[in-house]
Length: 171
Image (tube, rainbow, N blue to C red; front, top):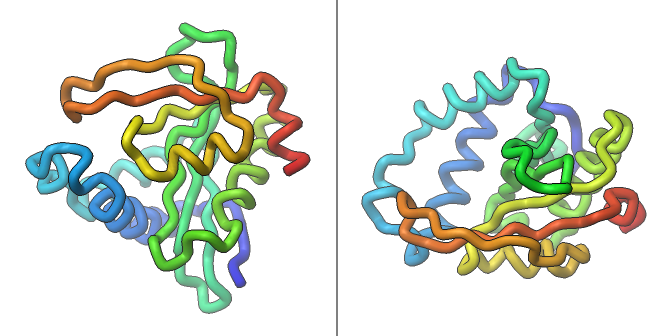
């Protein structure tokens, strides 16, 4: 059993731990090893400290009954302004051993509810095309709306979108 709550500044290190572990397990074989070798707990901790201080970033965590952070979602307004979608999931990661427990669905639901309260009515997420979790977003009804090549990762990513965020809340 996990509980979902808004992340606090003191959660940055635990969120970074999930982020690093998830990147290494998810993207090995998808992005160049030299990219994965650059990912550090220290760098990710600092990045999440900045996000937790930024009012644009909404961050929620999933934690066990003992307080261990096992997943998180980060989102807010769509970042580019180049699309008709006005909300975005910036990142969503769950430790491998906690997959298939409805945690991702709960995190998406909480984020979608808050975005809707903030006046955002649509949302997208960018996901690497070869990421096995792409199916999770498709299962939630996300439709492909864009595709681009990321030279720094040597991989394609696709944008999946939901025109009506309230459909995510109802899931």
